[in-house]
Length: 220
Ligand code: DX5
Ligand code: ZN
Image 1 (tube, rainbow, N blue to C red):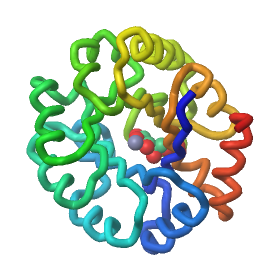
Image 2: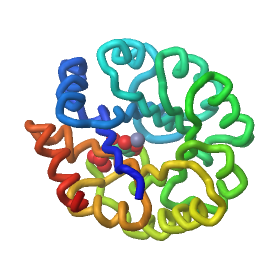
Image 3: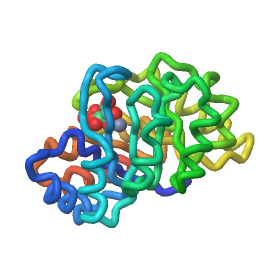
């Protein structure tokens, strides 16, 4: 079983003190930093772009895990790669030429991830599984932090875990939305190995304790 990473999502951080927020989760034991980029079109919310990422990147050693919830992500991939992204994840639903976009991410020197919304089946990304470093299973409908976990997504995590074992694929399985101590064991048992947590980490004043609680729930 691979090591389970915790990736706090800065969507739930206090943006007026973003530098300190990032430092707190880094010293508190985070593995990756999850960066939610929203365009007000693909999802009904707006966040930030490469400029904010450029400001964060020099402040942390944590790998930056960039989740693009935007239309036409290919237009912005070079800018996010240049801003220091470790992984760039695009939504299958936002890409007409998904294979091309994933290879563009790799050409820009980042790891390539593909995300699927709760209503999108694994079959929609079956033909690119050999090309990706990460598959992000949305466990809520994207757009906002603090929503309730959707249990029906568990069977897609299992399916991706089985395909990975059967064909020897190398992707990590990331889950995003409603992850906290009660839901973390369910997704990890199903095969997830990167846990995004927004509200569960930044909603608590002691971020280290919040992450430890998630790890303890996993029994490891
Ligand atoms: C939702 C974002 C998530 C969000 C998760 O659209 O992609 O990364 O920050 O927040 P929580 O963990 O609060 O559900
Ligand atoms: Zn996200």
